Length: 370
Image (cartoon, rainbow, N blue to C red):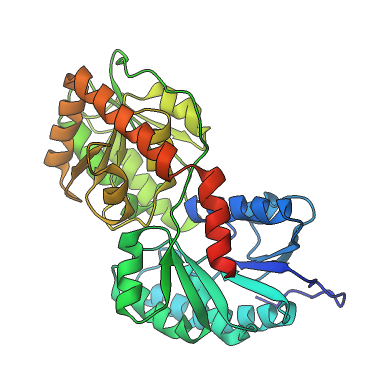
């Protein structure tokens, strides 16, 4: 990949925010970044986004400058292809860092929105280093290795949950917590069951989101239907094909629907129970917060930010990768109208007091720029 041709005109002005992302795709982390960009623009700050081409730059508000870089991540390769991909990634980190160096100046605040963009920030060596908005709860050696590579560039880590902050603090990084939020107030949706009842998950079709576990759980619940709302990354094509094949087997045939990209509220209106089935810890899943805000009962895996969102009666927590436990929790929620009403009341109260994004986003931007 050749390096993009850079404009010779200056891109910086006083009070500029430079956001750096490793992907041009849009998932939860990028949605938070887009919301932060809106807050910055409302404050008459100039914004530059350094990220690969893709849907993300197409969604940038008018007046935001996009500076393209190579994609910075591994896309599902295996074996020798994965080794080749890792070598390519090292080269792309250097390329991206050199591009980032060209667009950062002494009056800019650099905000790294992606774990896999950290090494590029180290190559760039931005003035006063960079703030890292942490959307990943570190659970693998590979993640920790990337953090160690990028650590010299990190001025401050801003984690979206306490669970996400803990391993960073253990690594010696200066870390604060600024919680994710969603739109509030929103109307409470009905908790009366559809006939037949429908379970839904709002997540990219990628292996760690746990769709395969949810399929096994619903396979043991005759009469319950299942909907997947969300797109997928090109590197996950084999996994998506497996999900379709599993959904077509006799114990699930005709009961599973793949909705693709869809409006979250429209999807939630179709569902009786919302599941977050991630098999590795999520930092602060927006899909869980959105379901809580609209008053839909949520079942989530008991780790990461999901635990913080749902504990204390705001949802039901189950062990990760445990299909029988997940099936039992779904049955419990579907069979108990009083439980559904109590869960959703507690969840909406938690959103109103802790996760209203009109409050959380300005606080997050403040922490990132402090």
